Length: 256
Image (cartoon, rainbow, N blue to C red; front, top):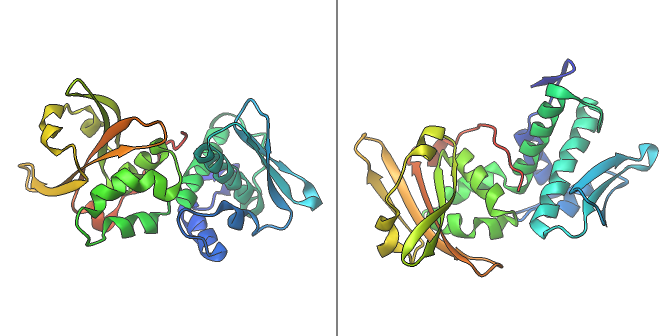
């Protein structure tokens, strides 16, 4: 990707490199990453927006985040603003001032960087390939807590890396209500599913390898989760078995 005749660095590669240098493991300690730059710091303030970054010239830089935001949102904001800092330091891209398509390109790049930093591709694929029973289904339920990110950000990333279609549901009067679908394929997301078929399996996590008739083995997983809001929901996911070995790389919006 090019902005103003400048090729932008690959966010996956940069994120992976920073994690390695900072010796960070999931959930990535963003403080360790921030400290890789002398004078760069994070400050919490009362803000209307989620945050921004300032270049303090010879004195380093400051990432300002909204004090009242959830911890997962603060982590995303810090990671996103770090993306701007990397583009500024590595590619000479100004921290602000872009307009139109250039601004969109920069913001998307920072979104991708935030995802690669908070939910590292290598770690996700390592989890997906674990031989333990129901490992993928367990990750679908526990992933947001493992990586300390929002469900929204985690399931977008999983749909991306595993070529998965993920449905989040809630139960009401013995019926399931679809809350949100995440998919790397719009056609898959549009397919309707008879959620009543899930009723025997609501005690997950569990997973099965199925042949849906097209000759392509498909991994089917389900798990039930309960987070801080005390609302129980179920996560149903389907993904081609081949994606567990390859992964995919398409852009998604990671904002929570």
